[in-house]
Length: 307
Image (tube, rainbow, N blue to C red; front, side, top):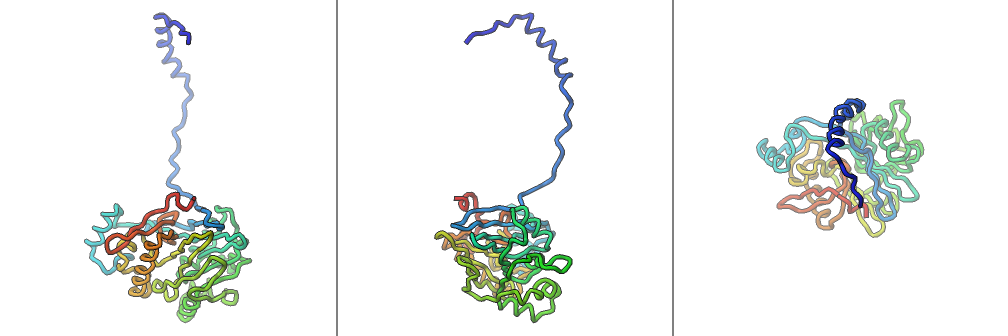
């Protein structure tokens, strides 16, 4: 390698030119603040299926102990929260429908809070509402049936047939509930009523998870020798519901039954090392369960479902 000699005169001339060079650099505006953001969908291949979680909404809510841990003291709630590095004054809520492409049908599990929100999430994932073949309603809470109808009263999913649990439908049909009457009841004639163990498509099987609502259903997804559980709402928080499955939850309609269901299904997930998708789990809502003491521990999925 050859070296170019640098004389003292040349070095001084270069140093003298530095202020001029700096003054000739064009001024640049600072990069703008863009605010927090996240993806709206996550897709994995599961056997021969494509499984996509859809972030239909996310929002903070204050004073989470008015929802979780109703039967424990504020001190206990604070201690458990502090150990998990989460605040006690607010919590972030996620609303995550799942869409599964079986190769022959596009099956949507739950519809979020509104038609606009689920349409936006589907579009982000590359789908349109008219491509949905089957809409499965796991239970009748408003954040699951809210997207069934548009504001003009027309069905959001114009080409779909509907599936829900018969126990769940009958219970809500006997109540006075404006959201059910506006969103679900008009679709009754297009809806297939099912029970525990029924298949809605090859590889998609209903699993009774009663308690959160009278006929709340989870769904087992099986393809290519793999199993996944769509857990829906039997456990609604990754710490408060898993570490302490016996803590009472405001939205569980039968709190004792819900706690028993929670413990039974969490035990199954841990024993079988089965991945699950939870409707209200931290985005993208995919994870695993481990036993820990008398409760359980949530382990977010990393790359396991990408393999």
